[in-house]
Length: 212
Image: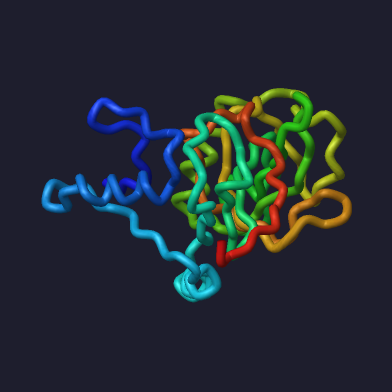
């Protein structure tokens, strides 16, 4: 179990204390022999750490303002994801029939919520092996419905499309967004059973100083 922050200790609420102070206190009380590890941080070496993450095939790094308090339940510029590749969750709205020798489905039709409407973001057809195709298909079948869940009718697909209730969430990595708002070179990474589909929105990259 890896811990990276401390918000309460010895009867004190530490959320308003600077991040560096909270980390120092946390490191003092962590006992590695009990199966709890302290998540170390690097000050002023953001670019080197980012390069290491890229070479290691990791998703990216997290940049944090050293003097920041802990803010519960809100997005903040004080903590930012600096991603090697673009990667986020998408809601599955349907699938296409497979072609050739492929079993299960051809691709997943995915989207994200914007002002309560499910926007179409494209199809994801790579990242699957035979077992994964079977497992995902088994979860899609019970959710099948007659109409598309997307706010606008998606473009025509190369093979017939089937629609599902928008309840499953897929994690996807991709190269970029097209001007039309469609994913380029998406790859399926897995299902996110811990994520509520209604909370999935389009993530907007933020510029951050890796040395902060």
